[in-house]
Length: 213
Image 1 (cartoon, rainbow, N blue to C red):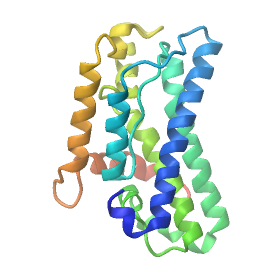
Image 2 (spheres, one colour):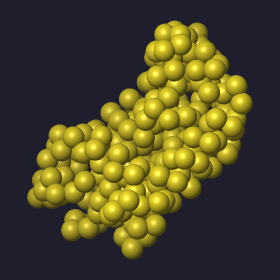
Image 3 (cartoon, rainbow, N blue to C red):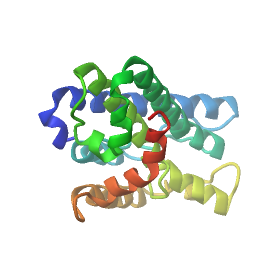
Image 4 (tube, rainbow, N blue to C red):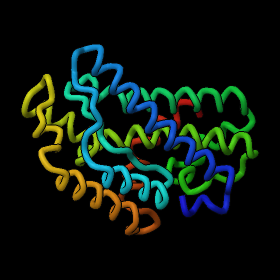
């Protein structure tokens, strides 16, 4: 998001996407976990969430600390809900700003996360919100602790349902913190014109962005 500071409206949309994504993911985790009799307690340490917020500063997106959902369905439901919200915002952008839909073809997610230009302020904040939500959901599904994707992968290997405590990576806080530090480094150290984390988001989120182009 440091790159987006020259575009205050875009930065506002990215901050809004982070807050909305973190809130929606947590609420859906709790709702689904409660419906199917799983744990709804918040787990893992605040350090994980703090590192996710720091990553937001460098990339325009980040993650929030894991919830205590122990069933694979509940773990997956949070990121999927955020992805759906991002797609809904993109659909709204395509309908509300038809003259600026070309920006969906010309830009990669990393371009938007670094402060998309060439659109009106209203379109800019809407597109930043939409892509921020998409990237939040995609990032959450990467198979790296402490992210939900790691928990899902561990669940598939170790215990399909429910997810065990070791699968959650929550036996101690250190595995989650080390994973979060690794993600932060991939968000800060560039390789070429992008950092590895932004390159991964471009690879995975671009098809979702192009749906409405």
